[in-house]
Structure formats: C-alpha cells, structure tokens
Length: 451
Image 1 (cartoon, helix red, strand yellow):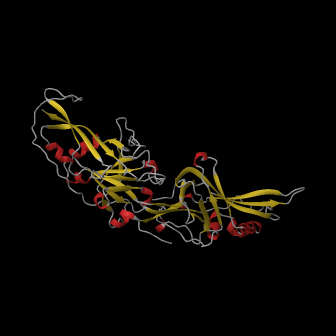
Image 2 (tube, one colour):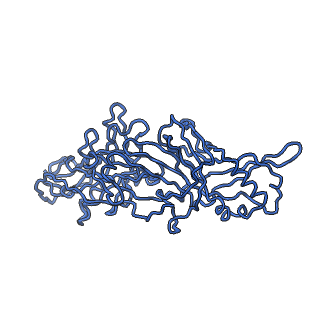
Image 3 (spheres, helix red, strand yellow):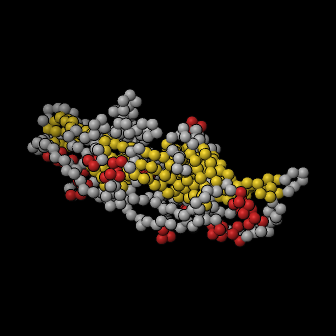
C-alpha cells in the first residue's frame, strides 16, 4: 500500500515584475455620476499594456472518495502524458437469513459485475475500452484512519484478473440512467461465494466479516485502451443461481452491492511528458512560470495542474496621468492553437476564482447578478486563432488597486472547471500568455481620466 502525507492542494512561487510607462497624476475635485462619458472634464481611455503573468500550479492531491463517481481508463495526451484511472470498491453481503434453507439445494449459474455509465467520457471513442477486474489483496483503509481517500492512494490487487470486457462506447446513444456494462466474472469465485451461502459461513453473515474474506475489487483499463469513462457508485456483483422446482428450476439472484461508500475512490495518475516534465513540476517545484513552458500554462485539475493568473504591475495604474477610476476590466484567455483538436476539445465553461498566497481556491468571479462567470466561450472553427474565453474582472482589479498591503501583488485568479466539476472530469486547456503567438492573453482596461 502506498501512503502519502497530505499536503496543501496548491502552492505558489514568486512573481515576475513587469514595467510600464506611467505619466503624472493630477487630482481635480470634480464629481462624476455612475455613467462616465466623454465630456468637458473627463474621458474614457482604453489600454492593454498591463501584462498578466501566467503560471502552472501543481496540485499534490485531492479527495476522490465520498463521491458518487468513479473513473476507469487510460489515454495518451501528446502534450501532458499518459493518463490512467482506476476505481476501487468494497462490496457487502446480500440479504441473508441464517434460518433459511434457500441455498441448500441451489446450483451455480454465473457471477456478473454490473457498472453503470454516467454519460461522461474523455478520449478516443472509436476504439473500445478494455476493462479488467482484479480482486484486492489488502483492506481499503484511509491513511491514518482519515475521513478521505485520495487520487494518489492505491491498494494491492491480485495480478490475475477475475473478469474483463471490451466495450465500444457509443456517445450519441448514451442514456445515463440505463447504460450498463456487464462483466462476467470467474466461475471459481462464484462457486466459492455460493458455497459460503450454503454452509452459512460466518463471512457471509455481515459486511464487516465479508470484507475480511473478500477485500474488494479494482477496475482498471488495459494498456492498449485510449479512453477514460465515468461510472456511478451503483456497482453490483450478482450471483445467479437456481433452486429446484417442478417442472423447471427457478433462477434467482444474490446481489453484492457497494458496502462502504467512504471507501469507494479513484486512483488517478499521469506519466508526464513534454514541457511540464522538462520544467520539473512537482511537490517542490510547484509553480512553473509560462516563460519556462513556451509561453503557455496547463490546466487539468484531475491530473494535478491548474492555471494561475496574476497582475503584479496593476497598482501602477493609479499613477497614470489624470487617473480617476476604473470603468471596466476584461480578461481575454485564448487556447494555444493546435492544442484543442480532435479529442481535446476545449471546455465550454471555465471559472475564474480568487486565490490567496497559498493558492487555495477562493470565491469564483461573478456577474452583476451574482452568478458565476463561465467565460462566454467562443470557438473559431475556421482557423482557431479567435477561439477565446472572456471575463469581466472589474471588481477584482479594483480590489487589487485599492489593496494597500504588500501581498496584493501576489494575489491572483485560478482558471479551472466549475467548482462543482473541479475533479469530476478530464477537461483540459493549454492557454497562452501575453507573448504567445496566436494565443495572446490580454487584460483590457477602460479607465476614467481627466482631460
């Protein structure tokens, strides 16, 4: 078993200062209404010379238990690396009556595992996903008997599988309430379970005793798979058996369902390649500036990365000649051209959330009505260079400008999937900084100035 000390999810490194030309400031005691227009005394000036700083933040670990979802699969991302996901479950005993003679004359039919799809997937759906089932050889126990299991946790399983299936996903026909994958399991296990029911073995009388006998299962994808899928936590192992009756035997089912949902979790790993690997991203080197990764940053929280945007020079705006106040600030984020083709379609909704000095995810940026902004995503199907997300970050920029503390220069925004989906899928984005050709990030500010 591999245990890991829990660490803070996100960290940060130092900021790179950006200099700009600033004119003198002239103060005039003139009252303005809420709408600023070009008149005798004031004007609106639009600038984009305050360059945002971009970096990739390393996420060490995050809980994947106490969730109604699990992930199974494997695929290759040519920019990030090989991604693998495995699901772990404990199973409990079926309804059981110690006085019943139900199983005395029962004969074995089959043992089948059923897993239900949620409709979410990531990867190449033209190739089947090859799922294999391995029995665990050790108990699922959280580190230090904690409340959660994490993406980095794993537990030993037998090398030989007790069942496998090759499943071709049909995205246009997925019905998340009905679509189920069935996997025929080894007859030897099925017969052993039925025999324990027949003899009223102690291991079959309670869930706690059963997991001492059968620790659980691991669901994973074979090495040739090119797809990751999401399944619900309603996994069932069904033992089919027959009881004698005239004129024909009666087929019946004993269902072993999920026992402890707190011990149902997913292990998710990535074997990194490319720029992030070369930059040495990890627990120690936990923030990589975009200058070290070809003017780009990488966002895929489920494999341990999130993008951070800071504005280290923004407070210099108040020194601009005749500056009064900000009217509007809009941030434009563009995916790197060529990074979102084929299976790597960009997420349609992404949020920006404030972050503190430890890079913890704070409150999302909202619109005037209080709803989370999701990026006003626009895709350029013709040549890709005008694909972008845009966010009104006026309130955030105003707060930075008026923050008198030294830490204000280190505060920023984290780009990620929506909070409710942060670690619930494989959505990823490669975005450019202010120097990236055809993917330039821009902060456009309209501010009020005296004439």
